[in-house]
Length: 351
Image: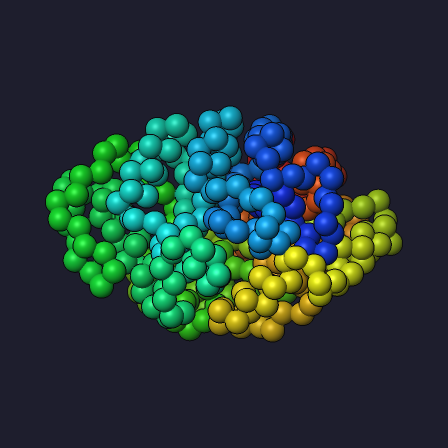
């Protein structure tokens, strides 16, 4: 099977919770622009732009960039890169978001997609006035949110009367040139069932090959039951370390996973676990980079990492979202050393 290679945009200035200084990986437009233009030149398929108003990696006092204004800028300076922007329904009006997406599609036709996130950070919602309900109700709200988006993109005018949103004769123009792919992720029973109903694609946390196969089988079965079709895309983040020798890669892994419970990001990690219904217990070691990015074990030589990527493609992953530090340098290394060794379609797409 084939796999597309993308990356995670570091809106928080870096991925590492235990490493305070990641050099030039600052939360600045200058750095994000350089990464975006470079990734576009190298042929990376998609970038995920996370939506966080507080910084959960470097501590809540540290700067982080706002997702939707940043996405507009990334789309404007790139030519091919698809931008998957996260959206938390508790922080947005769906009609306004539908208008935003239609406008972004005029900047970059066909290159806008969404990652609908039920949210987990109660403190962030408190500070910014977001609506933060119970876990299962956040998925009900997300499903309504997407229903409103779809209606506004397909009908003019559009009316809706739900538990969370009411619209009466709303007009949204321009509409996107094509229907944006809607991703979503969640591990609870309520989350999976809701996502199978409203999303086109599923993005999961990093996992082992067996965990990924189980997720793919489960979500495809739910989508077949509800819609008569499988999930369109399966995305997964992974932290990637490529070095000339396995020993060098292991030394870098040891450096970034030396746990400091007093690091600024540790409190948000604990809150994430409290407010999420995860299928697995996270270890402190996995906390080091978030999104269980180390669990796929894409660490080693170029040959080892390429073989592992192909295995995840065979398990059903269609989009790998790379995290690495420093991201600009590592994307170059991965493009040069790893991509020629992976499946032919992926290698051809990134030349």
